[in-house]
Amino acid sequence: MPIPAFRRITLAAAAVAVATALVATSSAVAAPGSPGSPRYSPGAEGAGDPYFPLAGNGGIDVVHYDLDLDYTPPAPAPAPLEGTLNGVATIDLVATADVDRFNLDLRGLTASKVVVGGKSMAFEQTANELVITPRPKLKTGQSATVVVTYGGTTTRPTDIEDALYGWVTTRDGAMVVSEPDGSATWFPVNDHPTDKSTYSYEITVPEGLTAVANGLLVGSQTADGRTTWTWDAPDPMAAYLATATVGRFELRQYTAANGTPIIDAIDVTRTAGQVGSLARTSDMLVFFEDRFGPYPFVSYGAIVDNDSVGYALETQTRSFFSTSAAENTVAHELAHQWMGDHVSPERWADIWLNEGWATYASWMWREHRGTSSTATLFTGVMNRSATSSTWSTVLADPGPLGIFGTAVYDRGAALLHALRGELGDADFFALATEWVARYGGGTATTADFIALSEEVSGQDLTEFFRVWAYEPTKPTVW
Ligand code: TRP
Ligand code: ZN
Image 1 (cartoon, helix red, strand yellow):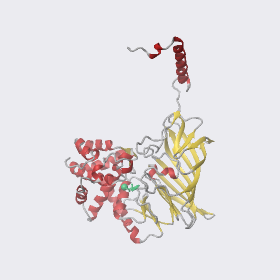
Image 2 (tube, rainbow, N blue to C red):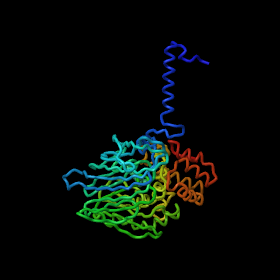
Image 3 (tube, rainbow, N blue to C red):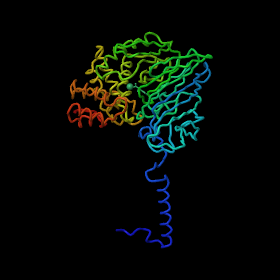
Image 4 (cartoon, rainbow, N blue to C red):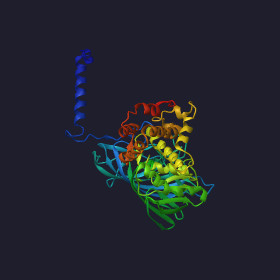
C-alpha cells in the first residue's frame, strides 16, 4: 500500500488539513437538510445533444406552451426587413430533477418579466439562454407554470449552415420554420425533440393579415384594426415543428378522404400552377395510411408563402412550402408527419430516420403515380461515384453540418429500399407501421430502428446496417 502523501508533511499542517477536510465534508452533507431531502442543483444548459450542445435544457420537461404573440411586420420598402414581436409565453412544465435554477432557450429577443407560480422571479439572459431562478426551488416531479413576457425586433436568422430559419421576417409577415434549433428565435423554449409538448396560440397581427399555426383554427377576432388568430395544437410536438407564419393568406378548408380536416394557407399571390399539387393531398393521405398506419394528428394542410427560405419543412399538421408546392415535395412533407413528426429523432445524428423515410415515401408515391419506380430511383443513387458525399458520409452520424446533406436523404432512402429487398414487402411494411405505433408521440434512435427491424424480421441485420449506416464507403454487398 503506498504511503499517503500527507504523512510526509508536518504533523501540524496535516492536522489543519484534516480539520479543513472534515468541515468541508460535514457542511456538504448538511447542506440540503435532513437525509433523503432534495439536493438542488442547476438544470443543464443543453439537452445533451452533441450536435447542438445548447439546444434544449436539463431539469425540466415542458407539457404545454400557450403563446400569446403580437406581431407587426416591417413597413414597406425601403424600410428595413425588421418586425416587432411581443410575446407572453405561458409554459406548463414539470421538473425532472431537483432544480434551484433552470434554463429555457431564447435568442435575439429580450425577456422583461418571468413569473413562476404567480410570483416574479430573478432571471438572467445570455446569448442563447434564459436562466430562471425559481423560489421556492422545484422538486423532481413538481409542476410549475412559468410566464415569460418578452419581445424585440425580428430579423432573418440563419442556421448553422447559413440557411434562413426561425422567425424569418418577410415584407408582409413572417415565415416560421425552425429546424433544428430555431424556435428559440421566437419563444422561450426547451428546444430539443426529446421534449414534446402541446401548444396553443393567440397571434395578433394587423387586420388583413392571417396568422397560421399548427393544429386546428379555433377562430379569429378583429378589434381596433388588429386581428387575433387562435389555434389549438393538441398533439405532442417537437419545438422545431411549431409555426406561427404570418402573411396575406387565403385559408382553404376541406375534409380529406380519410376524414382528416385540411386547412391550407395559400399566399394570395400564388398561381394555380404553384399550388395545384396540393389537390393530391387527400389521395396521398390514403396512400401513406396504407403504408405507415393511421394519420396521427388532428388536422393537416399546407402553407405556401410568397417569400422563400430555400426549402420546405414538415411543420406539424401544416407543412411549409417556399413559393410553390411541387408534387414530390408535397408527398415528402406529408410522409414526414409520420416519419419525423410523430416519431422524432432522439438526437440530431438520427435525422436520416426522418429524411430517409420521407424521401423513400416520395419514391413510392412516384411509383404509384407511374412517373418513376423505386427500383429506378434506387439505381440512380447506387450509380453515384464512389467519391460522392452520399458514400463518404456516415449515415447515422453525418455531423452537424451534414444533417441536410444528400447522404441523409438519398443514402437513407436507398438503405430503406435495400432493407425492403432484404425483408420482403410484408415484413418491411410491418416494420414501418410498428415503428410508428411503437415510437409515435416520442423519439427513437438508429439503434431502436435496427432492433425493431431484427425483431420484426427475425433476421440478424448487423452486417446490413454496418455497411449502410455506419461505414463512410459505398455499400457493395450486404
Ligand atoms: N427538413 C426539411 C425537409 O427535408 C429540410 C430542411 C430544413 C433544410 N432545414 C434546412 C434543407 C436547411 C436545407 C437547408 O423537408
Ligand atoms: Zn424532409
